[in-house]
Image (cartoon, rainbow, N blue to C red; front, top):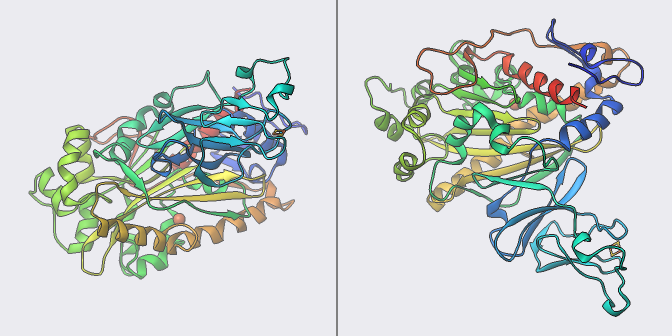
Length: 459
Ligand code: FES
Ligand code: FE
């Protein structure tokens, strides 16, 4: 199944070699392929835009991008959330120019056509002259609307009304993502507006890394382990860095999660063991990242016993949703020996074949104590995003790969996904999906490419 052929005759099968598990570096810089991605991936699949705590009140809105299409994410008077294309149906001007705010309606500055907070057409100035004409009824003059789904407060949208439901999109990984996004009464809260910055690289460079590339932490982020910011010590990094071992999960939709052994983390923080402890005792000894002791009873209300056991034993901590989301819900060691969390989620929004906008959303549980939220905001800012110790490393690496993908020789090189172990579900494992236990490998990133290939093949 591969009908995509580029103008020079190159096929998708030549770019993504499933026998050798290699991807041509040309895919990182090719403009023609980028145009196909916009249509076959970004206009077709579910994209993360915002969190509902950003727009709590009727009339609240934020401006976001679905790839290169600018949209308004708005809450209408009845409290419902809408996503509409920020293109005036009159002559194409942006209807909304503010990044965020509250407005009962949006009025285009060009000729003054106005739209309600649900996107429907409100009117044009000088109504008696019928400045919107009479060829179309008012109900046809609204803003173009996307299909919306709110999951655990996260606002997703797609232009594809016929495509998979959001549940189908998550597939087997819903069981795991629910442990992060749907576990408490109040759910997550965004701590301030997202950080945004543009990097000179193709969206797929951070994109494929978000397919749970754990391997790079050993080397690229080594200094952080040495400094105690990430798990592991200088002497033991190659042997028992807790972040290297666990169970990697993925699915044919390309999403993935790295579930890391809590016992290893706990031992590192406290030099104590979980031996002989019940699930509840373990939860209290080392609550999952972002959860505080007072929130633990809420876990029992929202999650199944199996999900809770996983959270206490091997919680999902990093991973991504295809095509362009990364999450890092990680333990953040404190100098007093404890560990509060850092909860961050990024989207890598394509801005042409050579640029990506990195959008960093920072969360805490809404019902967490204020002091904990402040702590967690600090943790996330220190570790992820613009100034984060972890992601400065990544943001320095990606543009170098991009530069290589533009050279005549560089383009001809391949990315090699050869550390593959194949799906093997451990005895008694909690959920479904494609499962890869042990030391982190390339399997989940390769599955990311298979999901990419799948969508790109489909005309
Ligand atoms: Fe918006 Fe004319 S372009 S009113
Ligand atoms: Fe990294």
